[in-house]
Length: 322
Image (cartoon, rainbow, N blue to C red):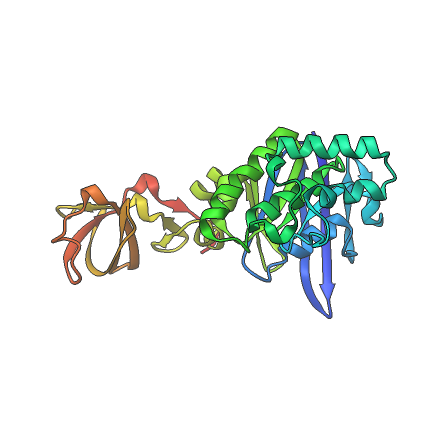
């Protein structure tokens, strides 16, 4: 069931178009990531959906109801920003309960709902701690709980993991996805990190310069990008000729020339644990080739080595535009 619909949303700031006729639909219970480079309009789109930014043209529907001019309080979104915005003078329980107090709920109901969500998200042993006593990941969980305890129809996350270190991000993205599935809440997350989007989302909106380039499942975006921007932004792509691309892992070493092989010279070798990323110069341009470590030949991988690269034609991606 379609639960949110954006129709030709346009937003301008001082003559600059931040959102250019953006349209999409989100289904009930779906986890959607808005992915794109800095300044492409991701956060502006999220804020427009939440009612924190007034749009210049277009419309927004929730459950078939036009909310284009409705204030944030009438859109039933729970929002978590990058900064978390926890109250330093309130402990975990009190931070989570804050929104419930403002709704005028009884003390018993507030206590019950806060205890329930703390137990569900594994924050029980931290319930009496203050924000400064928590790690960044724990603070993020508190911020999400504070949004969810209000029983919102949607959860909006604006770059929720960007302030955390790499290992914590890995752990938290799994936790956020588990929480989203546990509560079956429709979630929209802004990120510039392709790995986060690919690992967390049911579908991804790829944005560039205020426009949607493609909206699809992670696998479809990776395997069948519609154009050069998506191919290059979601993963790594080699461009071979007009409107064609191939992923580094789809290329392989060959012992001899054939119809699908080309000569190459190694110009860089980067060890990445499970594989080597080899950069080579060829007559079709500069290419990146990922070779599993266990298959690597130290002699072949030396700088200046000459070798043959096989380009499997069934792995070549045809693009609408380069």
